[in-house]
Length: 298
Image (cartoon, rainbow, N blue to C red; front, side, top):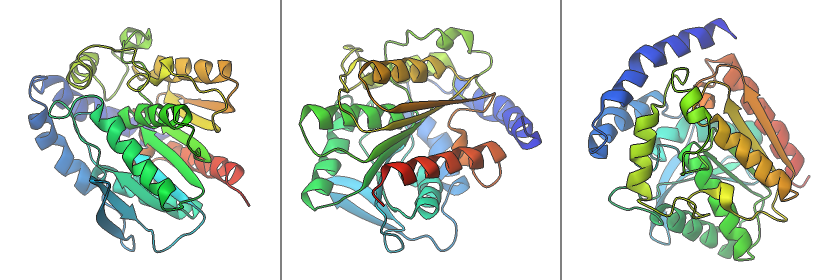
C-alpha cells in the first residue's frame, strides 16, 4: 500500500464516509447538494480537454475530447448509486482514459431516482447506444463505475438480448451488480469500506428499484451473457461491493465470457477517480489501456 493510499483512506474515512452516513436517506436531493458540486470541481477535466454538451435521442450527454482521438469511442456511465453523480462529476476520469487510449469520450447523464426510478437509467443508456450504432460508431468501449458499472453490464445484457452489435469490450470499476444486496461483503466489509455505508446503499436501491430486485436489467448478475464481448472488472478487498464483482465474474465465466477480475488491496471504492495522485489508480488505468489495446482492432 502506497503512502498516498494510506492518506487518502484516512481522509475518506473521516470526511466523506461520515457525510454519506449522516445524510437523510429520504432526501437524495440533499445528498446531491453535498456531493455533486464538490465532485464536479475536484474531478473537473484538465486544461486542454474539450467538453461539449449535447442530446442523443432526448438524453443529455457530454462529448469529451472527441476532436482529439479516433481509435474508438468510450461510452461511460457514471456512478452515484442511481441517485446522485453526473457525467460532469466523472469528466476528469473519462478525459484521462480517452487520452491514455486514444478514444473519443461520450458520457451519459441518465435520469436519476427517485424522480426517475428503474428502468429510466437503462432506457437512457440503451437509447444512446442505439443512436451510436445507427450513426455508424465503431470500436466502442463500454465502461462505468459503481452503479454505472452495473448499468454498463445491464446495458451489455440488453444489447445481447436485442441482437445488436456489441461493444469491443467492457470495463467496470467497483460495479454494483446485485440489488438483492445478498453479497456477504455488504456486512463483512461494513467497517472497512472507506466510502459506502451499507444503509445508504439499501436506501438508494429502494429509490431506484422498489421491488423486482432480480430484474436482469437492474441486477446484471442475473442476466444472460452468452457470447458477450470481453469484460475487465476491478474491485477492492475492503469495499462492501466486493462480492458483487466476484459474483459477476463467476456469472460471466459460466457464460463462457472472456473476463478478468483485478482485486486491489485496501483501495477505496472507485479509486481510479484519483489518478495522477494515487499510484494504485495509475496502475489500474494502465491495465485498462492494455485491455483496450487488446480488444480493439489494430
